[in-house]
Image (tube, rainbow, N blue to C red; front, side):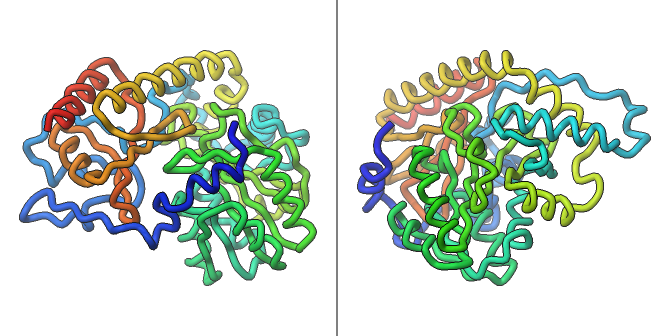
Length: 372
């Protein structure tokens, strides 16, 4: 893997920071405003496709970074939903997550209703005076701190985040691999940053929502006193509707976060499915192989269509194109929903198709675009 410092130099001048990038302007129809229809995150396909009444159905949702291979979970019997979750079930999930993520003690695991809910909780867990985020990245982090009245800045490179970390009571935030460009920073660089935070009386939050496949994780460094790690369940296991995510932190911080969440933060279904999936190492190994193959196939399709792209997150590719908004509109007209970004008019993110029919539809749409 390339050195982080080299990667930072590559990033400069390529759309960082977001406020320097041109804004997206999309006009799918005379009667619709794109700004009112395009969701803040991926998904919400029905809402997006209201602007494209003549598009073929069923719609293909490539707007999220969710695996097309869903874990074949065995759901609990309906009778299990007549009672509240037991402490033993919650403890079993914590143990399964600790083992899966390489954490030495399940007391460092906090389970919640999706990693987004835990992102929103962080400003209450950490008594920070400011937050600094390595951008461009997932917008949920900035929103969480802003909503809690904490000043937030976004920096374009790792070196600037290191400087910010030297200020006391600062929380530094990195998505690794990054969403949407797949930027990947080595664990050794992140641990060095965590040590800087510790010395200054600050914190480092590493969002590893897409780390299950890449294998780049700093979770095993816990209980590092300045380090917190977020893990998503639904993306890798293709089950976002289960709503399950994890915060990993030293025991005292994890205990405080659990107290803030209150009793029964995870549903019976999420407890059962999470335990099954996180313990199934063979399924994850086989699925990782399929995901790498699908990622390679997507790269080839994009290259064949003459589109520049990048990404190390496996579950998606980021297309860099001067006409990204037009490409997004073209694909929507073919019933294929991807993701564009209001802060960069040259970016379009695309996930992995879920079936051979979807692959053929995407290939035909990209070939049509290439012809145009």
